[in-house]
Amino acid sequence: MLTIVGIESNTNIIQTLRWCNIPKKLHSTWITNWSEVMEIKDYSKGYKKWINDLHKRYSVLELWDWYGKYSGKMGE
Image (cartoon, rainbow, N blue to C red; front, side, top):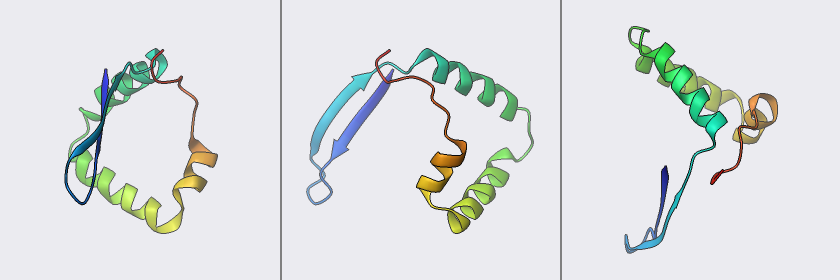
């Protein structure tokens, strides 16, 4: 289950509150990846460095075009 909270930035009042199921394929991918990275020492530090480097070199849209993989729709 995923909770989506939309907060108005000027007043900090919740404007949107929604729940949805995570697609099975996406959930399975997350579980597999999380299991693997739990075994890697200092993973968080390396991951943060890698993400920052990607953001410096590419736009989010470029990354989605090149590496995005369909894993279902929310609510499936």
